[in-house]
Length: 338
Ligand code: UFG
Image (cartoon, rainbow, N blue to C red; front, side, top):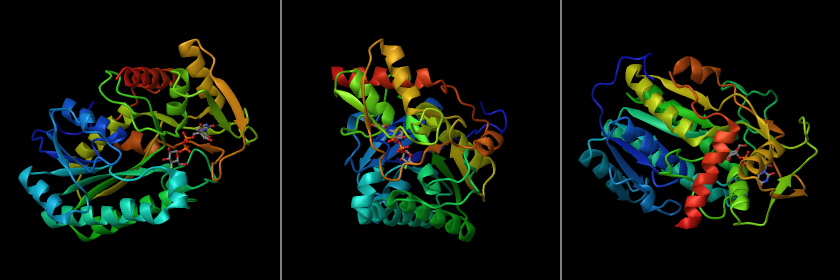
């Protein structure tokens, strides 16, 4: 997949913060699959130790624990950091904004400072489409206005700014990846979304399809979209994980740069299209209940992904909606069997 860059001959250890969580655990697998040694730093507040493969070293602790991070970077000879640790629930960020500014901004600052102090040259950051707020133009491109409409989006945008400034001031390279709607699970069944109390549509629908909940609410059917329900750019978590590995190799090939890239497929599906896919795959009809719109939901959020396609040799492998849904369902059944 890496024909655009010279092959990375020396694969140094990568620190994955939040590597026991949903997206982080898939990045750990993608790194290990490509031969990168991995250390995971996770406080296990929302992650699970069983989600970390044996081939990776798990360090339990906080990204803001400067001594622990310095020791971990030195002991494991870390050459790059992928930073996933943080809080991710948008409505919670509205109720408890200072938790989000602490977990996603203040603690990220501590981690970035530790990386700069230790001379770790490469940093890949989990950012979000929530930095765009309600975009005026869809598909939304990286240079369009960033006007977050919740503290979650702001907490990530502030960290983006710190990274941009740190890369300008220090021998430090960053790649900021703005995720659209991440869904699905490892096709080999090694990882998936396991956190209880999920709110994301495909996870909720998979729980309903496997009997863990009675129905799925449709939040709004009067949007200005083809069928009136919200449209999102769902990206398979394994494709997203692969984008991280490609971004790392890009940073190594072309250092001294601060890259920002949307991670999405550039196409959207409505809530009804997602639920139809789940019904089609399971041959069962999930009960749907029409409910009012959620506060702050944009009608449509789709990535302009031309930059990532032009910058990285990354190409989507599991972009079909049915593939994303089938992988999410397979993981939900595994969780039910645990
Ligand atoms: N939806 C439902 N019923 C549900 C859950 C969701 O109808 O039970 C709808 C939402 O209204 C929306 C779509 O399905 O139209 C997707 O909603 P999600 O909750 O799955 O995801 P969001 O688009 O709200 O959130 C995603 C990311 C966030 C990020 C945000 C940016 O998960 O991290 O995009 O807008 F901040």
